Amino acid sequence: MPLVDLVMPKLGESIMEATILKWHKQPGDAVQQDETVLEIATDKVDSEIPSTSSGIIDQIMFNVNDVVPIGSVIAKIRTDAARNEPAHHAPAPQKPSVQESTLHHPSPGNGQHGAATKGQGRFYSPLVLNIVASEGVSMSELEQLPGSGNEGRVTKKDILEYVAARKGHGAAHQPIQKEPQEVSVIDDETRDLPLARQLTTYSGNVEIIEMDRMRKLIAEHMVRSKHTSAHVTSFTEADVTNLVLWRDRVKKEFEKRENTKITFTPLFIEAVVRCIKKYPLVNSSVEGDRIIVKKDINIGMATALQNGNLIVPVIRNADQLNLVGLAKQVNGLADNARNNRLRPEDTQGGTFTLTNVGTFGSLMGTPIINQPQVAILAVGAIKKRPVVIETSQGDSIAIRQMMYLSLSYDHRIVDGSLGATFLTAVANELENFNPQRDF
Image (cartoon, rainbow, N blue to C red):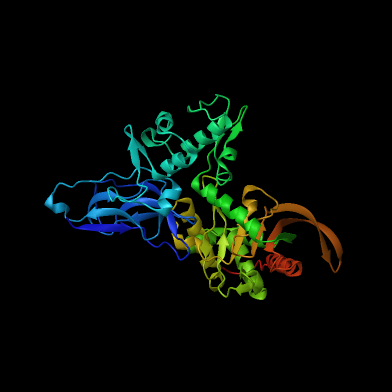
């Protein structure tokens, strides 16, 4: 029976692995070429993987939540479905941990050392058995341990919790029954600590919420950025009255003529691009002792998703787009982000990031640099305020549309003078917006 391998495709130059989110097909299911077989996620974006040929799913090699290296065979497709030959569909392998699926994935019956085993009808993964052996847990203890995995299987988390609890209670050889008011968890921050310190007990009225995959990635990226860059944030404000009046005047005609809305974001990006051309060092990255100045201007725009998470799609070569082109790019990427239609390449290659903290009412913010970039601009909410206006005839007070801007930059590369100069230049671009311009 001819079998075709479905492999985890290359999803971008910097992506080395992907997490399986959902299988749309199971062994025995018919599939057409280009039909979606599974959904996967990377540290950039979620994607659907289509079948490379028509046939019958013969075997799936990984389960949901497995982390799979790029290029790995993830399923086998029997292409002679028309013969109606009976197929011996191997079941999906029992769920390994992230570490197991990343390091190795032995085929059933290949005799590889460390293969998963069963005891008293229960399945135990190689990682669980290794922990059992290294921590001196007997098989009788293991067989009595309740499992939280599929069909009651013992997971890595289960065995680590048991070992830590046993050490903390005088090596009692019985599974630990948790008190109703106490919840024990092993979190990512303590996972590499000694086992006895991994167990954290919370008492009182608490709620434990497990981070979803994207929130874990965001947390990791933010902490890594703080550890990598010497963050400094500068602030300024801009009178954007002319910009607001122009948008109010043209937005209906703009949408009618261009079939897309004009928001403030493309106007901000237009101003940022002009200033990057004047101060190109803010459009760079750092590699060791080298400064890599990017000639391409690819603007990332932080976009809020419906679940509260953030993603940063990238407008490539923003300096080559006019205002209409920027508006269409902004709206298209934002719509794709909210509807889970972004491609992996849509979030790669950014050289500078803009985040609009004013969308949710914030006046200003101190954004964290999006690595490996060296600067990020935050724009706050536009508010009417009384402002002193200086004229040749004297000073006066007027109601103006004001907005705070803040620039976080990597002080290893961008000194305070350059950071403040660039930020002031962006503010001046916005203040000097021509209210009579066309679009």
